Length: 214
Image (cartoon, rainbow, N blue to C red; front, side):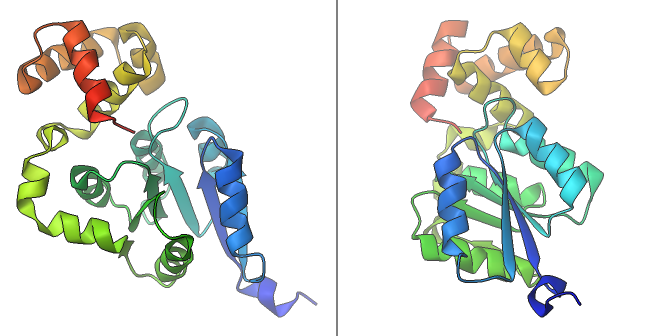
């Protein structure tokens, strides 16, 4: 006989390169046998874990060591358009929240949130609802806040490129990480300079650092 709790067990995959984050999230459900937490440390391992375990919910850190969480979400939704995804980040920029929702995320949490909100988000998304941290949801309602953000001027791909530039990656490394051509990255970088008013490549990197993307 299969124990009753295993019949309705909710499987949650957390893709985050900090083991303490996965451990902390797992501890929040230690007394709830109906939720099983698994972890992956980067996007490549996260996609493989998603394909193998077919989790009910995937929680993705936007700032991953290989490619961005946005790129991983794109890959997962290509595998399964109905995948339920919660984005998880230190970045509280409303433009990132809007971007995540536009890409199909059912939830968005800040790592600075009360841990109880993580539990609430998982349970709500598991029930087929959407969930955004209250303070982020409030910020998103103020159009001026999003419009004032430089990130609002950029496409998701440009945000990913800028995030990798901030990390110190060269154009060839960014092309390899995102699976696109060197020319595409170079062209996008040129467009980013125009959009943000950067005078040089180093100036663009400086702006990326100041924006604290990821």
